[in-house]
Image 1 (cartoon, rainbow, N blue to C red):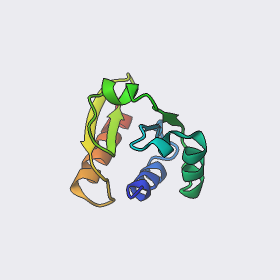
Image 2 (cartoon, helix red, strand yellow; image 1 turned 90 degrees about the vertical axis):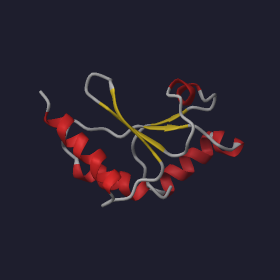
Image 3 (cartoon, rainbow, N blue to C red; image 1 turned 60 degrees about the horizontal axis):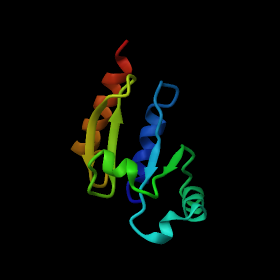
Image 4 (cartoon, rainbow, N blue to C red; image 1 turned 90 degrees about the horizontal axis):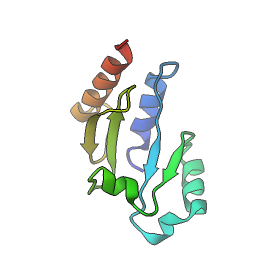
Length: 109
């Protein structure tokens, strides 16, 4: 949740571009598996992008994920171009690296 401000900022920066945020929610706790919990949290934090509920952790395992949160940048062809583990905050070198890659990918033909 502490990364939501960064995600909102990225959405604003790349609004109008061929860029989309998609969330994969792999629950850490059993109460997080409930659809109602995810919907309520999304509303409370103005998350209006698609949220896939990965209750069986299939997507999590397919990416060999081990940490919450993790962020992935996928290019136009579906290739994973960046994986970052841990919270993201605007203005940090990690956030700037991700945003720079997004800009580069959007500039590709």
